[in-house]
Amino acid sequence: MTPLEIQHIRTDFPILTEKIYNKPLIYFDNAATTQKPKAVLDRIVYGYEHLNGNIHRGVHFLSQKATEAHEEARKFVASYINAASSDEIIFTRGTTEAINLVAFSYGEYACSEGDEIVISVMEHHSNIVPWQMLCERKGMKLRIIPINEKGELNPDVFRSLINTRTKLVAITHVSNVLGTINPVKEIIKAAHAGHVPILIDGAQAIPHIKVDMQDLDADFYVFSGHKVYAPTGIGVLYGKREWLEKIPPYQGGGEMIQTVTFEKTTYNELPFKFEAGTPDYIGSTALAEALKYMEKIGIERIAAYEKELTEYATKRLMEITGMRIIGTSDRKSAVISFLVGDIHPYDIGMLLDKLGIAVRTGHHCAQPLIDSLGIPGTVRASFSFYNTKEEVDTFIEALKRVVGMLG
Amino acid sequence: MTINEIQDQIIADFSQFDDWMDKYALLIDLGNSLEPLDEKFKIPQNIIEGCQSRVWLNASMADGKVIYEGESDAVLVKGIVSLLIQVLSGHTPEEIVDTELYFIDSIGLKEHLSPTRSNGLLAMVKQMKMYALVYKIKGE
Image 1 (tube, helix red, strand yellow):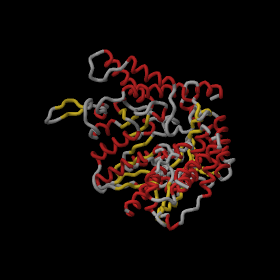
Image 2 (image 1 turned 45 degrees about the horizontal axis):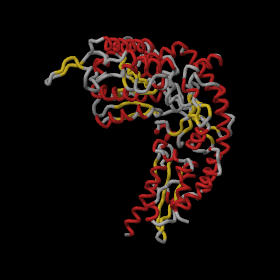
Image 3 (image 1 turned 30 degrees about the horizontal axis):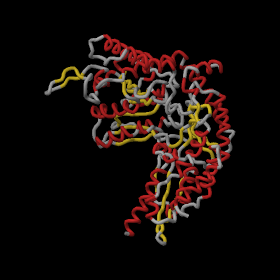
């Protein structure tokens, strides 16, 4: 992508012209949430101005149109990740809800006392706590895959953790702290070799990597809209049909039923069985719009540019004395976690903020990982295709100033 | 000096700077010059756990006055801890309980006390007042 093209892309994102404390915003917190292009914002407004009627049960025009838009969005998401069918796409509030859904429904279906769930040390709390809750409910055990000094999972240790009691593997595709892109295809194969289904947390992968459900063969794949240029409150659970048909519903309510009597309720077919209540049908269409926007730019080009930007930022960060980058895998996403000397991440983050630069500090909702590294947290800069090398330069100068003040 | 006189003095010290970075430089100085908390007080019941940084607070009574000591792992937080100790330590429980801490707002550091920052400072202020309240009740 040329600098001119990036400049053009930046004009699609209204928030990027904001001033923070009178300084131009430099937004390097994209792993927490991404900014929204005009096309997505317009789609939300258009939905409420022209297509708003509660879906799936109305006979009137607006209800029909809103239903069509919601179902079109589902089809688009299905084709974007190459699912076998749009019935395998369940709209959720986000990654967290999607994981909780699987932890509850699959847990009810398949798990009992003494069984085990395998996760890794680099998981986000949202891919730890739901499994812990399941383990507590059923008297099960969590098994943890460790990482090496570069921040990579060891597939051999992983294989050794799989046994006849293993009921599910739940692993992140990309670490939100280390940036490591896990070899999920290999891990999925290994899980399947042990006849264990696997859930992949794709929250940090979808914005940066092309994911293909047929190629990956994951049983469940989950992600959030807001990390991929769509609004908050919408996310996706992809599940293989065979699983979604077997496991019980997560929540009860309207929409997910076939017939209700006080004696017995029969459930609706897929995907509606898992979408109790009025879904976010405006959010779903905005999510499809965001994915279309990315497709228009081209995910391979996005990935290549973000890689270039991340490598450039890494190189420049290394100019700073005492710089320690946390997560040095050769296969990394657009995330750089770092520490400088013994300066606390909070101090760096607060001062960078005053200079108009948004980074994240702390444990990034991955406390077990941070504890295992024996550090108080990290400063994390995470990039998007709308960020520029000039912004990286400004960030480096600001960081040098801040480190000078604190050091 | 009364608690409010100290607060006013701090406001005056900070008001000489227009630039944010200068105010922060002062805060960093304060943080760096805060007497480290004796290791024997760095015990679990003295920790105020924030999401971003942690704060230790110890309180004791001497000659009818509350003595606060504290520390944090982040220097900016330590700077504010230093200010809070400067303002509240060495006063009677009654004075502390009745105090309104207006200096933080005035010097523009209120955001550090926002619950969303989750750096443990808001809980520390509450804890300081709580200690004073307990000493006050004990003394009555």
